[in-house]
Length: 44
Image (cartoon, rainbow, N blue to C red; front, side, top):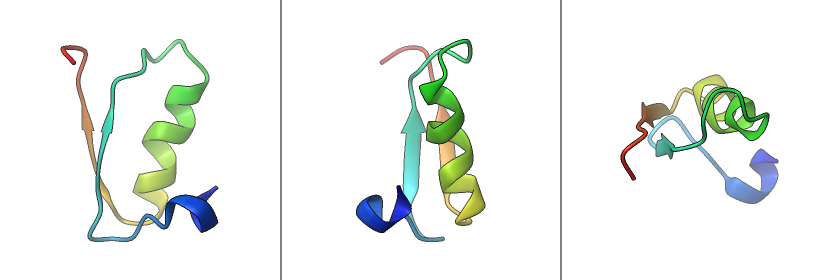
């Protein structure tokens, strides 16, 4: 997935998916595994 998104340590990502939704796992942990910052919000 990161070959397409190209997330790096200088990337900033936002997760608006609720944690009970399976996509939130990739939205949260893929950027973290690359060293990027993840901002979690429910007010989008």
